[in-house]
Length: 466
Image 1 (cartoon, rainbow, N blue to C red):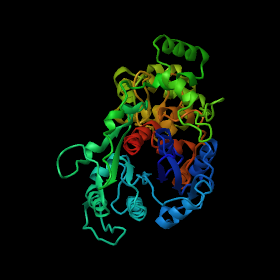
Image 2 (image 1 turned 30 degrees about the horizontal axis):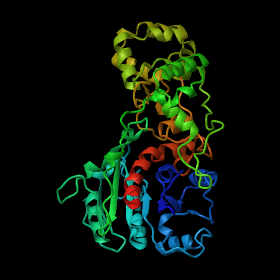
Image 3 (image 1 turned 180 degrees about the vertical axis):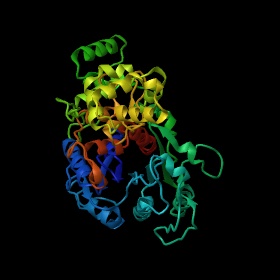
Image 4 (image 1 turned 135 degrees about the vertical axis):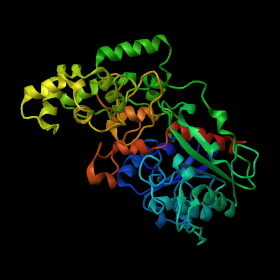
C-alpha cells in the first residue's frame, strides 16, 4: 500500500520533514530558497533513500517563482510514479518565514517577510490538497498588516490582523480551519502548541493551523498525541558532556532513574529509511565541534548560577558584592585592558573592585557590563528542567554542566533531531553575513522540532488511513 503524499514548502534544513516522514507520509516535493539549508536537506533525504528526481523532487528556489502546475508536473515526472500520478496531494505542510511576525525583534507592518504566507496560500489554492498545515510564531496572533493584497488581488484595509486574513482566505479557497471550540469564530490562541508536550526537551510554543477541505474528515485532536512526561535537559544531552567525570556521573544517575530513553532513541533513530523501513542509526556523532572560548570567557560563564540570566547575575552581584571576581585573573586582565573603564593603573582598578559597594551607581553599572557584557538574555540553563526556546545564536545559552555554550548537536538534541541527521555548511556566521547566510546553528534554531511535527502529521495521517 502506497503512503499518503505530502509536500513540504519552506522546508529549511528539514525539521518538519523529519516529523512528516516519521508519521508515515511520502514527501514527493519540497522547497526552500536557502542554499545552505538545502545542502543539509538533500543530504539527509539521500541518506533516507529519498532520491531527488526518482522518488522525490527538491528545488532550491524562491516560492514566489513556483506554481502549482510546476510542482505537480515535477512530481509527475518522477520515475517512481512511472506516469501514474493522479495529481492528488494529501497534505501540504509549510512554515512561511516568521521573522516579520516575531515578538523577539522589531516588527514592521510592511516587512516583506510578512507577505510570504500569501504565496503559500496561492500554492495551496492551485494544488488543492486535502489537508494543509501552516506553522508560525505566536507573534502571528497580534500582527497587523498594511496594504495586504491576496493572491487573487483582493485588497484588505490597513491594520488588518493576519489571523483575520488567514480565516477569510482559507474559507475562500474551500477549507475549514480545525477549531478546538464550538464557536463560529476561530480562537487562534487555542491553536498554540508547546513542543514539550510531544517529547521535545524544550519549551517552544508555536501556532499550528490545520485546514481541511470541506468534504474531508476533520483531523484528530492533536492532544491525543501528547506524551505523559516531559523530557528534561539532562535526559537529552548528558552523554555529550565533555568532562568525563561529570558525564559518567550524570549518565549513571540517569540509568539508575531509568531516564535514558530519549538519548537511546536519538542514537537509534526515529526516522526510517525508505528502502529498508528501518530507522537510520548513528554510528558516530556529528556536529559536536565547540567554540574555542578564551579563558576570560570561561571565567565569565563561571559567574552564572543555574537558571540565571545576565541580568540576574548583575542583580546578585550588586547585592552580594563582586569580591569573587578577584580570583578570576584572566577576566580581570581582559576588563582592565578592554573594558573601557578608564583605568590606567592596575592597582587602582583592583582597588575599585574591592570597594565596589561604595562606588556610584554609574560606576557599578559600567564595571558589571564589562564583567558580564550587555547581553542580558544570556542564561545558564537548568539541567532538571526543559530548555528555553532554541534560537539561532549559540551564545545565548550556557551549558548547565560546563562553562561553555552548546554545540550544534546539543541544540539539535534539544530540538529532537536524530543523531544521524547531519547539518552541513558553515557552523556559524556573524555580522552582515547573518542576513543572507544560514549556518548550522541557524538551521537548527529555525527548524520545526521533528517530534512536534510528527504529532501534527499523525493527526492527519491517522484520519487518512481510516
